Image (cartoon, rainbow, N blue to C red; front, side, top):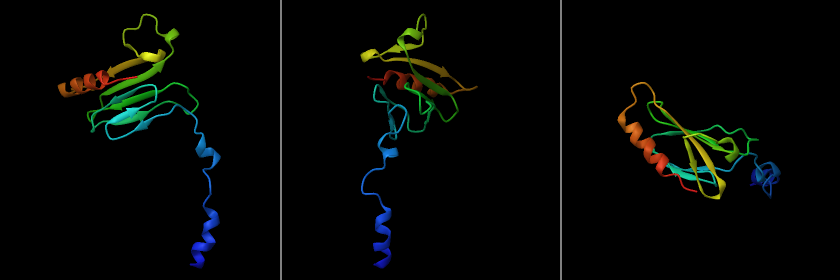
Length: 124
């Protein structure tokens, strides 16, 4: 009991300032869902999510990696930087995403259908 009483002042009564504001874009990841606030999508449960946005970057960049190391990269871009690009997806609210698919050597056909499902699940 004495030990518990001695430790109680160590726990802060409020959330520390460094945890109230973390730099970088908001995002949350569940087992099969990625939510960046401005857009969200569903991904296969066997895939990994790699968040590549630096903490100071205002735009989201994320890569979804399949078990065979094939990838789907999604980068939020400014509309002014998009002239003539074919791999862009325009969402509501002025959100523009660049989508790049990179298949590993010998990628299974299932990768392409899963990547297609991932891309078609993107919503604002």
